Length: 240
Image (cartoon, helix red, strand yellow):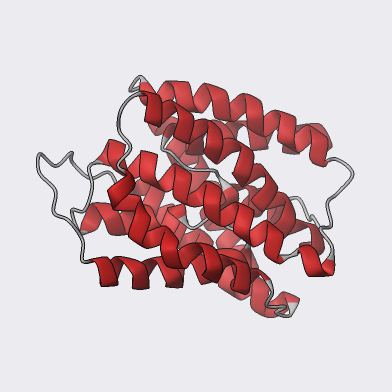
């Protein structure tokens, strides 16, 4: 079972990194399906997120798709709010409900395939700060980097192109994941014994996925497969 889970993490990292994401929502779904204890889930997902999102950002940055001015207002509030959110200790039942809804939201994000916009508009600084704060808080509380929520907002409101969204989301996830992990420090960062294998799988999948995404490699089939995993895990969590 441990080998199967590591392979699934590798595939998940590949898919998410190709779209400029760290994959926390996918890792959380897999951990839920494989019966990993909730005490390990948040910290493990954040740690994997840090490695994979950094790889994804480096790939999209080198391809010239990153805009610092677009990211800046979001991270002003998201980083401190992710730190505060990570300090909130919610009971396992509430955690599973919140996580279930977020996983279903992630599924819609993966299935949503917007067309590439030729022009984009600049978001209001205050609105961007507000959105970043809300996303950061929930990302820290649940153990996701927040990019899975930020991406559809950027695309639906026409604030960024698809490639720009991938680049911005990757660094957004990286920074929030670090903040969220630091926020758990007061209770001690608890990681499972097999975390080293998960990290190795995440690194391999992340590097391959980031390369594939930057070279327009299609991952449509894997997208549908992972969407099914997220739906199953989300429903499973909501029904507990």
